[in-house]
Image (tube, rainbow, N blue to C red):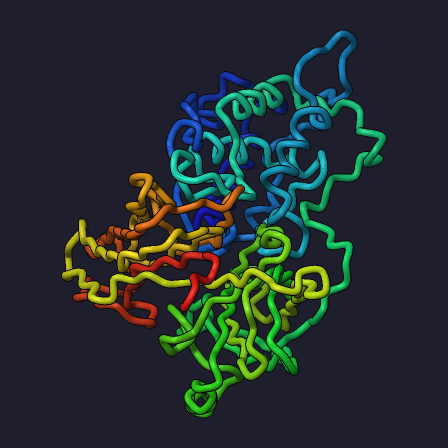
Length: 484
């Protein structure tokens, strides 16, 4: 929903500029309200779903609005004046965009417009600045004072001020870096090695959201990895077949014991795959990986990986959003990189372990609902590599901590949950949790009339996989403990 808001701002800003001066002015209160940035340096922004990290939402993004020119700068001299020592696009603004924006804001992607070139950034500058001030872009849900994660996105108050100064100075372009010939970074990580295995579900799928006005379709697809021995996955590189509609993905491993149940789920659904929302439709699945637009491929440490058993199936839960391409289809592919067992003959096996508040109940109308779960006390040292919190549409916040032999530790804090920005987070360095370890999970919910999905009134809510059920859940990525 945040990109929808950004698209609306773009349209409004275009109207303001069309009716006003040709050059932007720092005194234009309508276009540029003076406000302290709501960044993670000052205050934690909202989550989601996401998801790796990141995650990018396009629930109702409007490309027509996004294509509006937000600044009529024909009369602005964009050349760098003699003696000018202020910010320029190539020296100051382009690096900011590449670090925080162009992972999602590229052509034919889930984001409603691109931010790869000088002209693209200039045209959307007023709206981009406003979202920075509000703290809605770039999205980074976790609070900065709880855990240090890879792939962090965020702009500081100083960077927001610099961006505003660049606007006020007339969008000075400056000189392109010869090392890139003026071409912006794509924002994507290039993997030098060929994957050990590439898999997909075998056909193009055209989403069919429920309802006349539906835009979201959640489908699970089954992949047979076709391996003749257990493998340890160090990295999964997710490659959407149609980035304009793939909102996010979660992949699970299903044990052989679930094969008949999965066949029944497929048989009961008259469309390809089967409908799924909160999970894959059974309780003993193990999580393999997650992905959202903007998430870069992040391997585990060398010699570490999640085991795929030779007789298991991969269940891929896809969230499609059809706003940008209502008739589009997708066949996402997954590049699997295995641990080199010649170099690491005894790989460290990682497991992704859930903790959930399965007795969750939020009464209809309760705007301050809460769910809580406490894990068993583990009399072992635990190495924690990453974490993935999860709730549905009524969630407001989620907090995870642990009591350890070295005291209490905050593991992740998402103070403003948004389902569309949930993420899959790896720590900068693995966290060592000293024995004994007891984990705690706390989730907040708003089940009031003002926080319902369109067309819904408050009802009592319980734990469940359905769209209008809820979850209070976290996954821990850990070294498999002995005997587990």
